Structures are given as C-alpha cells and as structure tokens.
Length: 228
Image 1 (cartoon, rainbow, N blue to C red):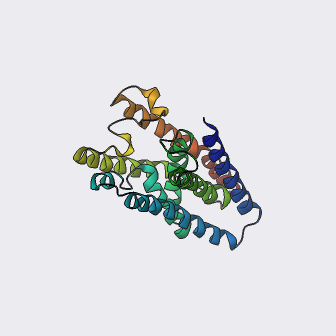
Image 2 (image 1 turned 45 degrees about the horizontal axis):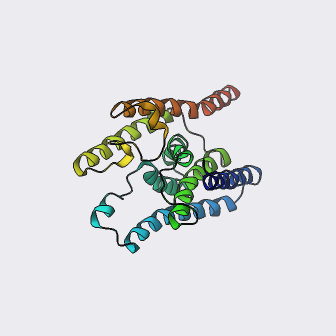
Image 3 (image 1 turned 120 degrees about the vertical axis):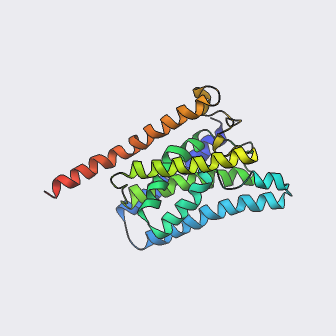
C-alpha cells in the first residue's frame, strides 16, 4: 500500500467514523441534511467522471466502455437514492454492496492516476462515499437490514451480474471484470484464471453477505426475545 493510498483510506475511515458517531450520539434534523449532501457528493463524483471524459476528448469507444455498469458505479446511484429516499431495500443494497464490494475496491484500487490528479480524488470520493453512506445509514441511523435481506440482495446481485455479463459479451467490454481481471493487484489474483476466478469470487461474495448480516441477525434475535 503506497503512502498516498494509505492516506486516502485513512481519510475515508476518519470521516466515516466521525459521521457515524455523530449520528448515533446526536441524532436530529442535521442527519437528513448530511445524507442529502453526501448523496449530492456521490452523484457529483460520478458525473464528474463523465465530464472529465468529455473534456479530455475521449473517443466514442472510450465513452461506451465507461458506462456506469461496474458494481461500484451502480452502487453510487443506489446509495444516493437510499440516502435521500430511505427505502429499506435501497439501504440493504447499499450496505451489502458497499461493504462486500466497494470496500475491496478501496483496499485494492484499480487506479492508474496518482495524487493530486482529479481522477485520484474522484475515485476515493466516490468509493469512500459509498462505504460512508452504507455505515451512516445502518450503523449511524439504525436502519438495519431486514430478515431475508441477504436473499433479496443476493438475487438482485445475480440478476444485475447476468445483465452486465450479457452487455460484456455483446460489446467486448469488461464491466465487473467478468472477462478479465483488473490490471492492478486484487483479490481475484488469488482465484486462478478465467472463468475459475468468477466462481470463487461468487462464493466469496455469498460468504461476505452472510458475515455482514450476522450482527443484525443476532440483534434481530435479541429484539424478538425482548418483545416476548
């Protein structure tokens, strides 16, 4: 982990911790304003990526391969909607995708640009913002995943992956790294060649969903006991 990477991740951890702690210790109307502000920052970061491509005179092919179809790109819009609308299914997707997927992208970034480039900031603001949104909603504001949330999010993830896989096959793109591993080091390097790494990544994803749900399974059990 390089110094700039470590500092960027540390900044995400510190800001997220402050935001979550403040929401738990001092809830109030300010959390609504903070949620909307974070949603604007997230969507703004994604729009900023597109603006950069246009300003840098990217070709039509570049633009086609830069559609918001990576899991983290989709998570940006879902997290933004969850922060504003507070719909439970959106919150659950944000939580599970953010901590099972986007967190990995923060720890092993597929990023060629370095500090202080615009894309360096865009990457960490977007990915860090998803993780911050997930923890703010669930840990800070107490919007726990419901019973069977793992099943719901799992089915949604499978359907989305199949859709993206079809687009990859039709266009030759590599969204969600379904055709090739990322150029930078990642967990996928541990899982062997294509298509073996996809199967292992899927199994890891399922395991992470259950692990992330464990604290709330226990809390739901305690809550149920107290109601009897």
